[in-house]
Length: 182
Image (cartoon, rainbow, N blue to C red; front, side):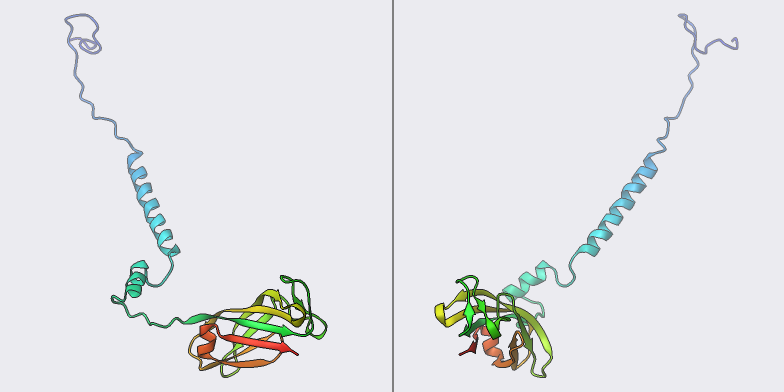
């Protein structure tokens, strides 16, 4: 057989040499699969770190249903609600009512400070939703979020007008009712 015989023969009857070749290996498959695995790992780590801490939804549902868990029945904080009435020197329309003269600090958004029994500030809120009482004055809603539980009484101060003591039961039940003026 000639040196060129059988290799690439194009005439009928000529023999062909059969050369077995292995399929070409795809060199990108390994790094691609590895990249997918690393990406999935990073994604799961980031997702895990972004989740809220503490008991998951299952524990919360169990606590609500009273089935298992060691959650306490009392919340750590509450929102103190109540009313504040300013009598005498006030001006404005129903939604814009505010104090005047010596009471000019009494207006929508004025600070409400809550103190514990030792006199330490525990929460700060505001008077909101002013409403006119006609010639008598104004009334406001008291809203103080995140007041810590555990006190027997609280002291409340509107603006800088001095502290008034209320019981914890009244504070938690929304029965805070304060007045200022004549």
